[in-house]
Figure 1 (cartoon, one colour):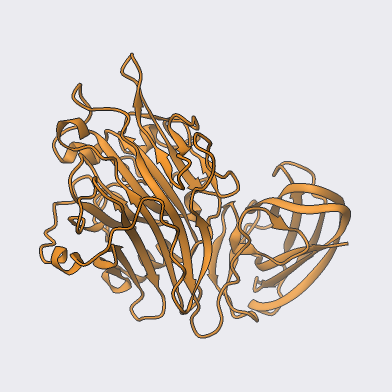
Figure 2 (cartoon, helix red, strand yellow):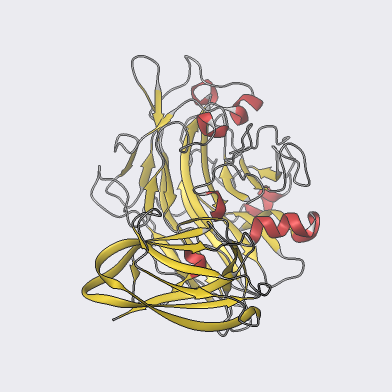
Length: 463
């Protein structure tokens, strides 16, 4: 969604209605499946790293191990009205977000007697969705847009999209961290928009706040009257790297790395992403197509989602080990780039054994959070981390472990300086105070100097 103040979301406001004639014919053979279809089996060479097919009793909320609700009218400290001018209040009420008992999620905008709108917005807890080195990532959902058209649809703005992980907890770094709008629609038009946001706002290499986008009519049935499959495929196996957008298997928009400068592309793609589903009401994008909410707008038309899945295809035989879905095992390997939120870190390709990515540029005051680490009933007493450092002589610092709060006293730490280079890796152990149960784990980085002093590839705990 875009953001007039520099925050993300789908900003398509003004995406000029790009012509896509000819694609409808190519998609005419697409098959519409029943509403309760299961997610398809991953094709050969792909593995499923996330799935929610929204099975559960009617009237219940979403699976809290997969999703978190974003509520209110902004992120904490973020721009008002989600940065896009929309007017609804997002809630976690099952009136706005619930399962229908037939394998679908329904996100339903409602209006009360005073004219106030509520709706729903959910985001994956995981923020680590990205292709392995030389591989591919596919984010896909099968859904039906709100089945409302004409004046009754004025102000409707459903979306299925993804934001760069560094946005979570920051809320001021859009659009540089990247946004991939897999499906957006406004005003009940028979059209799907796909957009990549990046660079700077306004203007910049990605033409913000409009972004680099395209649109097409839904094939076979209209976007509102039937289910369609919307997907983006991020491909690191080709040069230049490409991000492609699809509806029912038809590729109608592609953005490649050579369309922008290298720094802009790197800033938008050198980290994971998290996935978002929501229905906004009003705002810049609907306004750009002839009108926002008024007395003709009808509440109660849900976006219906059959499934969301994320697939990954390896490249060259090595890639990032997918971080765990949901809670983490303290005694397994926790990939450092799988953080839930962070401050001051970057992600980069590592040359360490196993490939993948590490977090880096770590200096005094930086931190990373890993939620739901399960230590069990037998106390952990040791911490191990895979680290590298290339700081100048005399520059060093502490890698610390804190539980449940960044301001909590460290339960253990170790010092690290220059290990021979920023990709010269070694595993360093440290003793920690006994820990049992389940905790949010913070890695914090403390130094007497402002310079970067360490990179981290992974960490684990032991008895």
